[in-house]
Length: 151
Image (cartoon, rainbow, N blue to C red; front, side, top):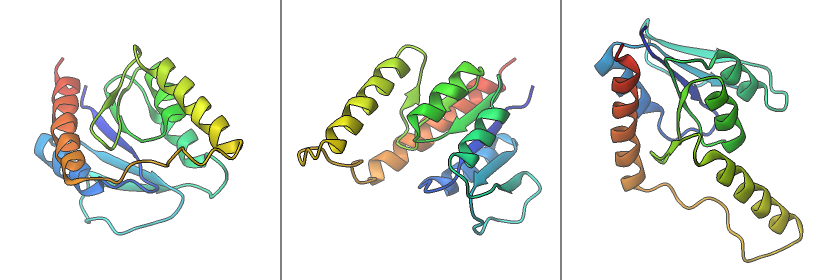
């Protein structure tokens, strides 16, 4: 089974890295987004534009997720759906989502949403995306694709 990269492409900071790894392993990569963007014209690089409705891109990625697929997303709830479908899931910061940690990540997300909703000013958004994050992502994606490619 040839693994495929499925990328939740809206606001994804590691599109180029996904293309590099896909080329290295000779696998297809599908970028799913609400709006189009420029990609190299290669047969193994595809883009799927879905409607702009709430979670349409997430719904499409989750629908396509299955064993042998590697999903790239920073969305914790989408990561959970893809894990349940049997896909490997990697955050854009290079940290894998796993069955062992996803429940805690969902609970933490809910707590942070509640704090922000109550007007708590001590909570911050996501940290800035650093050069180290990009490097960690590239290494983790390489490992995830090579692992998925093994029979």
